Image (cartoon, rainbow, N blue to C red; front, side, top):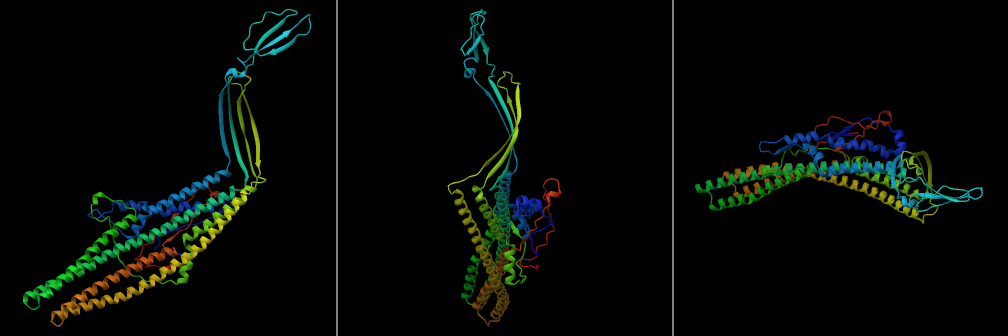
Length: 548
């Protein structure tokens, strides 16, 4: 599917990620293409937006075409910027969840000092020996708070000797521990759920882009409409001024009464408010568009408009059957894809809810370095390897897992119901836009013919008044009818283009996305690359072609 008015056309070649899909599941693998896609859809407009900063008219007001306005919105619109940050946030959540399945290497170190009094006084002891008559001496050790040198022993005497314990006051240890989760019932569902959530944020960005494009197009057309309405009102004022001048000349010549002059003056004054309102609506429309595309107020411009729009309100017919439009919307709407991703998230949450009745197994290994506490020399170190396996299995958790499973099932059912309602919402939006286009088309054709008739009626009324066969009221009525017909025709043309923008949004034909990423198993590292085709020129508003 392609579209001649695609504001972003991303093209790619895609290779399967079989090994990565086995590890993370397809949602996580798709995110690799998704995050880069957001950079293509938005980041590559930066240079165009910067060029527009330098582009200004002689009055200092920047000039925008429709495409330039859309590209500026890509770079500055706060809704798009927030959606981009949401993608980064969900990518961070995915990395955080994935970290649970990867090995962890930890290093711990400690150094301690212990007061010698905790070892029993000053850390020494007394050994007492008794001997008599050449018998075998019997040693007896007793800790004493202090030691006194004992005299030399002799047969049949008791000797006390003081010895030191040799325990160091300082101790230290260093451990390097490598741990790896072997099995946990919640890790794999959490990884896949995080990938689906990341995809949901990507589709939310796409939906935001489509909405912003439709808003920019509508507001751009509103500026063009209000500018055209100013022209209509100015033309009406000029005709009434010429009519007033003609009646004044006729009154001075004595061919018409004073009443005709007063009537022409009243008609001219009554037309002035419409012109003033049209000019104010034009200024407001410019300010609203500037806000949507993210332009800040520049004090140097004073009360001048923030931008100038270059374009026309044209009618270019486009025919597409309603059933085809609905199927196209169901297939391409990012809003529906986001809802489907939410279903996947809730499905993985349900799988993870059963983790409470599943075992949890992990292993750890490492090497330890400790000081020798039996030595007062800190350089004496003990070192060695250690290994361990840790496992746990909840035999009865007080129905905690049953409660979590019940909640997860209800959330999954809610996500499915929300998706079904979203499908009906998309169908409703497409049918409304389709019906509005039909109405706008009929109004445009009817008013186009009416403008020609009103213009001819004004010409005939003026000619009859000029030869004295008509009255001034006929001319004024014809002028009012012409102004109304022109305004209605322009409004119908604006409505057609605005509803066409809404139709493109509801059917997701304004943008075309193609995910593109390299197989990480065939390259060094994990790389993601994209390439973008040359954007097709944006035709006049309303023009659209379809191919399938």
